[in-house]
Length: 296
Image (cartoon, rainbow, N blue to C red; front, top):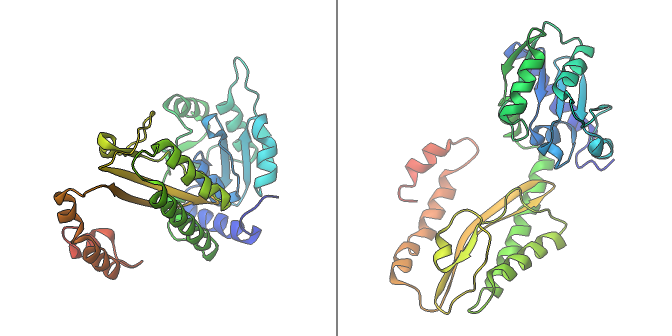
């Protein structure tokens, strides 16, 4: 199996999720977030654009309903044993098949949590699920149950985050070398991505905002890439992923004579950054950090 965590770590994560279910009075959880599936079982796919659902019972029962294109993916990348397939054809009822899978694990009449806040569970699909489970069991929103567990990282997760940090630092160094007047922004983008992939990293979950000239003010990715001017500012908002754990950077590279306003903004930044690092630790809320570092 292509697992990036031990089976023992996956089992511990599932036990913790079941414990939280018990606290919330839930008999099971319908999981639609891909990141939750990956964290609980290792299941790794981009197929969440299509209907799929995982069920984790409060007793530890685990099953996945997905399409045939992801069957081998689920077998190879996860610890899931019960993998069921729904056929994508006219008149298909995957939500009904999901209800049948939950019924096999004694879900009728129970109280089941649902990850409604999920990219793969569109409004249409959410209505399908509600309709399929109406009268079968009680569904309640439990979108944050796994998300909150994921906030505290294990030693293995921290190691992946640190590797992502090393990769994004390498990409930053490449950008500093290649961002010169006349350079194609798209070509620089490609070299940054190449550095990450050569380091056995992954594309980040989102395309990077990056631009020169007027486009330096855009903070969302857009199609079409310009050229670095002799006097320019090029904004980078990049990220490296390693085993899907991300480290991100946002910075500006200047060419030519800096605008005096840039120097005014940049001068206090190192001091404020040092102050922020001193006040921010795992036991401190972000709002408290912000109050301690005004103007940052």
